[in-house]
Length: 198
Length: 198
Image (cartoon, rainbow over all chains, first blue to last red; front, side, top):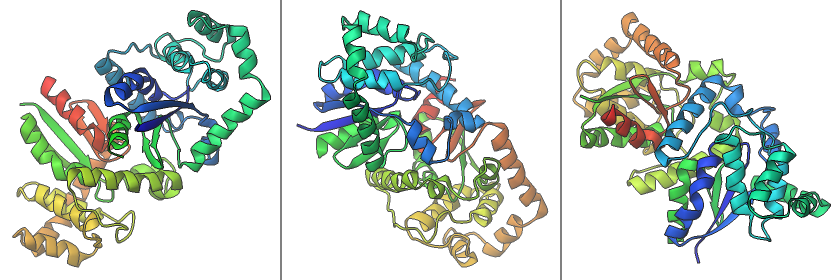
């Protein structure tokens, strides 16, 4: 079966609309989907950026927020601006998402964290926010937090980020189909079409 | 009538597929189209870039060439890689395109220059390349070059670039519909839809 990997970072604005529709779009396309949380911070640091390029380059940032608002309006997605802060620290959420992969709750958790960040202006680095999301999904928050913070899970997130770099990923969201890389929310359909024809 | 402005820079890779289909797409959408050549170099310099970000950030550059190849394949557009050099100096071509606006040959000239750059691996800063393009369009190359190099036309290109900055433009291609800005070849359809609904 054709397959696609969805590489996302919880701080990434354009990862929000991608996360909210990718499950449905992949199912419609008959393409298997793997959710791959990773961290953009270490990658941006290698590019000389200690902040989001949307903060570093003001015109680009102003445009992004307007573009995101148009995209969310088109998709019928709620958007609450400004967010609680930008970029938020998605480290805890990424570790949780990775820990939830084996138990199958990573996709729903991921969508809920993105909604908390961009639709509800919540602090996604706050344990209370994450615990409330896990509770809402019927996940044992204590067990999930313990699993997220094992040395093995921390190492797995680091390895996932290193794999992203090896695959040429430099931003989020990205999609990979085998060795073929697609960058940006607006490339989801192209990536799914590639997966189907591969 | 709904209207769209197409802001392009001759060195810009993604401006090539945008230029090659915008006339047809705007006609199909019933949207009036204005071609607005400008210079990205001065804008990039204000961002601290003395080169294309696709050269400064290697992973981004590798991705862009691959992405451009996929886009051109989808659009049936010829692409010859590597180009003669990247980024090429589009100053002369931009002055000519602006000078050709009043006489109506700017769109055809623009498409021919993009094809020379990206489909024919030619040097678009070379007077012989530009003269050959003008000849092919039945334009008096001597008169066009004289018109391009008048102080008034040089000032007009500078003013056009300053207007781009005022409009929040930071990359190419960009599209504006009134005060609404759309950035990137992949936003052409969204910009046309906005123009139609405005």
